[in-house]
Length: 307
Ligand SMILES: Cc1cc2nc3c(=O)[nH]c(=O)nc-3n(C[C@H](O)[C@H](O)[C@H](O)COP(=O)(O)OP(=O)(O)OC[C@H]3O[C@@H](n4cnc5c(N)ncnc54)[C@H](O)[C@@H]3O)c2cc1C
Image (cartoon, rainbow, N blue to C red; front, side, top):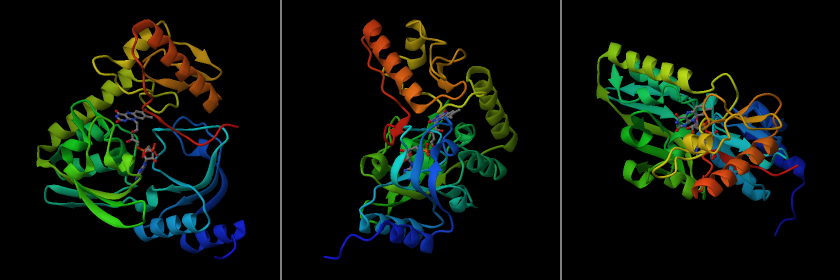
């Protein structure tokens, strides 16, 4: 067995495969909550091979790794993340249309995907236009809004498994349900996905997207950093209503607040720490449980370590 390699080799090896290798990178720059401590190493993936090589290096040096997309559904603790953050974003964001099908790399934004569909007069992805995440994050979460979810439109996803092998998983194999997928369960990585849409009328498609955007602006606190809905929808209830009916609307911990506009959103009203947000979330969970006997579950994924 070879001896444990010095840390420097691990960074150098990553630099050999990736154009962007950032050290001690504040995750507050990469999360929609605008909070979170530093990532030991933050790399921007450029290809599937790149991701597989990064995982090999992580394994060789016994480092943990996590995947991020646009950071719109993660809360990184204030102590940051040990190991490697493999970011799948802009560098892997190609979108290709072919008839009624669209293939998107995992780093493509859902807004770009929805716009590409509209440009091709394809209907089915209007729901996704206002969700501020990537295709990879959306498949992982089975993102959805209004009248649609990823499950309705996806044909297959190309993934890397935890051993570094690639597979094409068809819709049923993805086991998509409310904010759940096999990707999350089996620690897989999405590198691209095929969507199967229907021919539509461009004006109807863009009108629907504009209507959804207006509904978001009217109802959601889009002027403050957040991760969207903080909690999953408990069966038979709405998290926001339970929180509001518990008298928690507007409640603050440090710079974190239960939004005055929509109690389903915890927002960063200025210099919140992730600990503030977590303390406020815990307070909501406890109060709602004591009042209604319903256990709220975070929708936002909490990552990293405490300070
Ligand atoms: C204002 C606002 C409104 C929102 N509205 C909605 C909404 O209407 N509906 C909805 O469903 N969500 C909504 N969200 C939440 C969020 O945008 C979605 O969950 C989105 O799909 C997350 O994508 P992301 O790229 O930002 O993922 P990230 O936040 O970066 O990651 C989320 C999770 O996915 C994993 N992940 C990311 N990329 C990959 C990949 N390529 N392969 C494997 N795992 C991956 C990460 O490890 C993490 O666990 C909203 C968020 C905000 C801030």
